[in-house]
Image 1 (tube, rainbow, N blue to C red):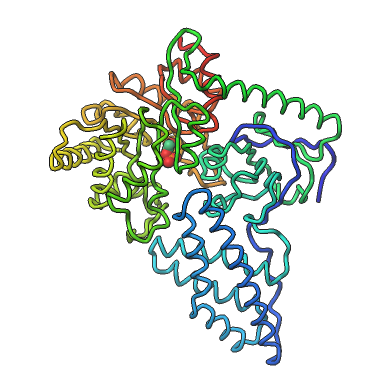
Image 2: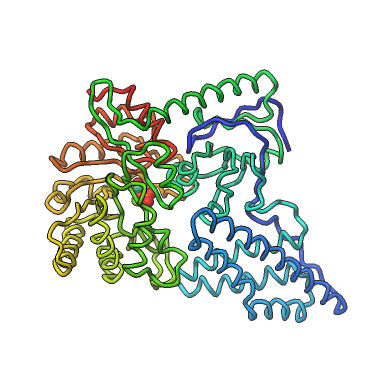
Length: 544
Ligand code: PEP
Ligand code: MG
């Protein structure tokens, strides 16, 4: 399995950094099932007890995940694992598995696979997105159970020992939730572009990641030593002593630089020709905010509030949302805080909205399109944010804007709610520029927008016609492609006096920063661990 010493494989960096460590190879899908094995009637109980044992172990795994996530992000995300556990306990599922073993006299794995397949098809056939998601959950669960039954000792992700480099084919959003956040040294993936959830998470956690390493899970053995050079976008397998010490020296230097950059990042930053640039943080949970403070972020440029909604069975009330935000934002009192309205859609469903299924959810009813059709959802957020604006410098950001009418309608509603509450001064309301239409016609948005924030992740996927999560078109998802930069330029040129920021991942792309500054950009919002390096890059660049 393992290849010769010092083998260098070039991939693509999706989160910068440099580490050396032993690999932890994660196989996310079960191996192919062996052919069905007929059993005698006297073996039925034995097969069923295999299934029961697997269920017990998997439930234990799910509990570990839930506890870990609860400690890291609070109780809400942990509910995903409770839901998985509930599924496992469903008496009709258990009964069907028993009937399958007894009725067809086949082995436990086959019976389980057949029943899960039927359930999966049943869920998918409803066409309801939320049930389709449950179908994906079933695949996950089935994989776990089958591995346990087969005695395959691929350790589940949540049991990954600390201090390892995770090697996986790709990471699904549910995998990233299970990742032990602090203990992962680095990540090597076969797939996963820079706009994928996995890349965003790795950057938010500051984990060096190199993607697009073909067959990594087969070429790298568990515990094999690997170097993840996510500055250069390459990995080196089994380094010899000389290579190792050369990289150890580079790591030492990088650590020194990063310590210095962190120290300096507490100060405001200027370009070599004296232009001040704000470096804000993209945050999504309480832990991100702590890291943002530690890394000297000048404010919050993008607060993704989806996590308050995902994994809840009912939408939060105004008071609940307000309490959550108040608690989370306390460390940023006195600084600019940009909170994005909920960016949900068929790709990110919540249990309390029955989304009709859509063939192309990314091109469907997402963000503001959805909010305008669920006014109660919108009103709760606007009310909570108006209240919060009494205490904080709140800016409200509207996701997935395409038409001027999107902004006009949100503003009208904000005004009505403010009037009813006797609030005369509205907090600034801004548009995310993440569709080519919004970028090309930014002038039409000016009358309804107090600021703009360019979301280059979605802007890239729509401009390059390459899905963020689609590993097959990673080569086309180029956030610094001239087509994307040209749209950024148009926005900066045509926004007039309306302030513009970039909050997509392009803002943290160190090699693109000089050109962004030359285009006139003076505000960037990045994953919190990257703020010091971004400030350092600005300090070395000129705006002219
Ligand atoms: C973007 O699209 O660039 C963005 C910042 O939003 P998200 O990644 O949450 O879609
Ligand atoms: Mg977006």
